Length: 439
Image 1: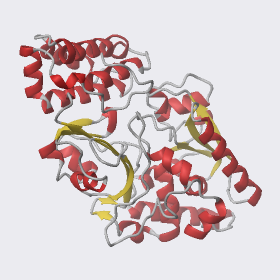
Image 2 (image 1 turned 90 degrees about the vertical axis):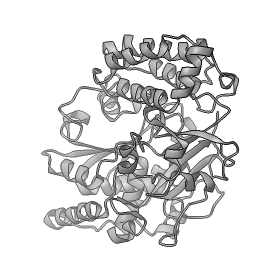
Image 3 (image 1 turned 180 degrees about the vertical axis):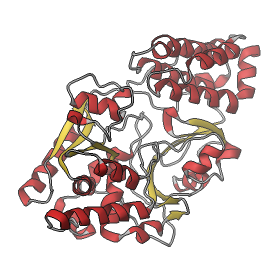
């Protein structure tokens, strides 16, 4: 299943297009056009103590802006910069552009359309933390994108734009490989699997050095804040959730794609901007495959902020909104995703090796076989798996399952007592790499 890219920003009157600024409906924006749109990279040529003070001022601006990470966790970007800058030793910057969520297309859009905005962010982050190496990580299957980014980096090197060389690196195309500690371990010559903490990457990451890891979109925002300031950034969004974000919208909408929206925009407003609904919805998946299902009456007016979604048990994650129509089966959709997640584990602990496959079987039994003991079995397995893994992978999968049992409670009862519903025969809504068949 593919998701078209829509370059129509959703904005209030307080701001103009930001990340998606520039001519709509075109390909990659080159460095000269990028500078015409955004201006040159705002890096003062300073040395010694003056440079350290300038870098500290940049971190101060990012802290005041309220920028939070756009990769899923929503951690304050300025605090992360300061933590790395405070560590001893030369720092490293790692930009995560691997986009592990199958339902997300926002980072691919940003890197394809406006690569120099992300590369500016990498260079500015390196300046802020005093890094002498910088990486941009992509999944290996993104060969064309990697070649395009390598050409953009070469253009910048010839022009002497960046403070450090930026290296494009490929990582295995797996879900867990996109986790920051997995990327760092891969760069260090090990397997691309999550590692135990502490130490954390900002303390000892690549080559044992303090390493700043940021999502591609986060770095693009950083590049704009450095140009326009913290007040400008906060002119969009809501208190406690500043700025704009890229959202991938899919499912039962007329124009699936990537949209730029202000933080705090109600989910229903985003769906209507994506052309409106093509079918009556029953639930919304927010946050991706480590996210949660929310009933439509709960989700429609819900603002897109970490705080508001968390208050109802939801998750903003990497900015994914998938509308499930009434004619589809939420349990079947969940079964497909859990089976995919069970196959994408790090294989480092019992909850992943044994727990997730068993959980996938139980959810499939409920969705496709109408097994009358399935709900009880699922609840038992969730209790055995959640919070017991070596990384957060099993926790993300169980969170999705628990939300499905809550949002589709009536459907689960139907499946247990009457067998599978008609919706299990509908074409799936949620994309799975490799177009996995129904289970």
